[in-house]
Length: 79
Image (cartoon, rainbow, N blue to C red; front, side):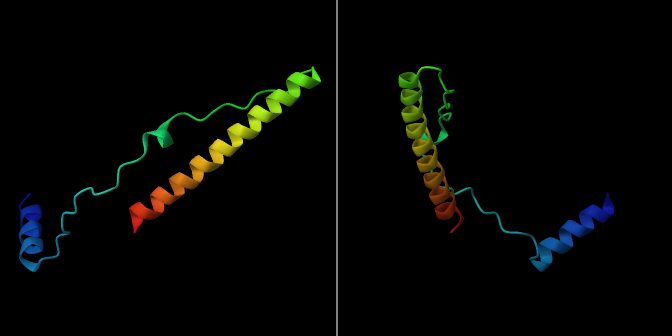
């Protein structure tokens, strides 16, 4: 116990203690924190399958946009 106290005193005197930095991260857009969309399965009927393909393309577009926006947030938060 005495060694820990001595170490704390030495660090305090020499100024080697790390400075306190408050959490200053920018706020995250709530839309980025929503659960991702789900991709649909292929259907036996060609018309239904085409509809699912269109929905899947939109879902992938939204996921890609969300990833880009999260990467941008991380880049801005770490600068």
